[in-house]
Amino acid sequence: MAWNNWTRKAVATMGSLALVGALAACSGSGAGGGAGAGGGESTAPEDIQVGVAMPTETSERWIADGEAVKSQLEEAGFEVDLQFANDDIPTQQQQIDQMITKGSDILVVASIDGTALSTQLQAAADQNIPIISYDRLINGTENVDFYVTFDNYNVGVQQATSLLTGMGLADDQGKRTDKKGKFNIELFAGSIDDNNAHFFWKGAMDTLKPYLDDGTLTVKSGQTKIEQAATLRWSQEEAQSRMEDLITAHYQGGKTKIDGILSPFDGISRGIITALSNAGYGKSIKDGLPIISGQDAEIASVKLIDDGVQYATIFKDTRKLATQAVEAVKAYAGGGEPEANDTESYDNGKKVVPSYLLDSDIVVKDNITSLLVDSGYYTAEEVKAGQAK
Image 1 (cartoon, helix red, strand yellow):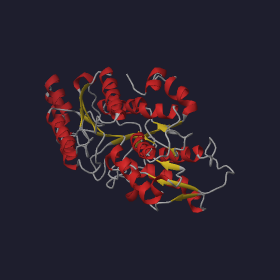
Image 2 (cartoon, one colour):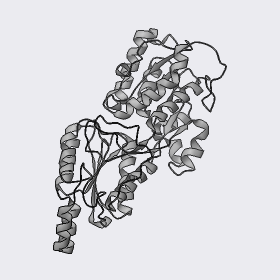
Image 3 (cartoon, rainbow, N blue to C red):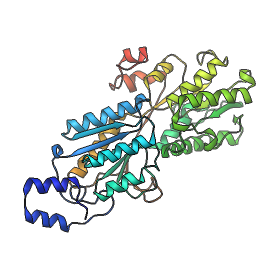
Image 4 (cartoon, rainbow, N blue to C red):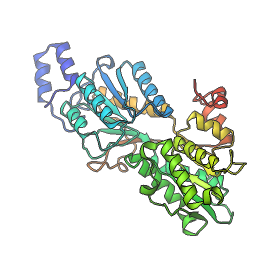
């Protein structure tokens, strides 16, 4: 077998020929098949380095994720190498290469492009380094051992439900009301190379389908395919540009009413709001802005919700996600396997990746305090200022 870094450390520490023989005889497959990685050997946290690859620092969400994972790992005693790739695929590839070269024993990877890391993950597999896919599923490779994320299909359901609720077409439980009428909506999706975007889209579209089928909702642009609605790299600027184009082409430059917009991310939502406000749709929902969904409970958008500008966001508590990633690291360090609560949903094209799914919440103006402030995620002062300290 190819010895991993823990094996080398164990040999150097104990100096036992019997141990060397035992380790040489062990066998494993995939990235996590070696000793100390589900192979029966336990290694102390202080002897383990964990490489943490995050996609970008341009989103406060990913900054929070990186800090949460790093702090919880260090609290547990692990050495941590945290890197942000600024949404540049070659940079992330290089960073992971360097983590392997520098001796990382476990990798936690939130990929920019879920199909672009095959070479790096094969190098990790060759050294029996376990790979934990963080929030974004890594696709097209057998060399991913575990996946920690939220129930992404349900996140999409929640995004669509918040849109329907804001428009008065569904109640707080998502049950259809008796409100009648015909309403114009537009649809935005996430980055097409992010596996999560497809789950969000499916959950949302399944929820909206009955309303689209009976004519209650109309997508005036006709852009109802994810390829048409996708926003590369979840870019706020690209979302603003597309919204401006939609207004010009399908809404008489702002003269035709738009009732709601499905947005899968708060940054995209803010770009949409800027385009709408510039086109004369008002500065708030009360003034004429459509109902707009979101995701990630970014502090700038939480303030917009509190101010009546954006209607809702989906709160995915990154502290809980980080905790689950750390639990997976601990399991591999202890020579075991992480606990999965889903072994069916996440097929990456090469294997069904065992996963742990977390729940999320819909945030609207009325529950900002109970969900975000009382839980300690933000302070009331941060919500008021629209900026986290």
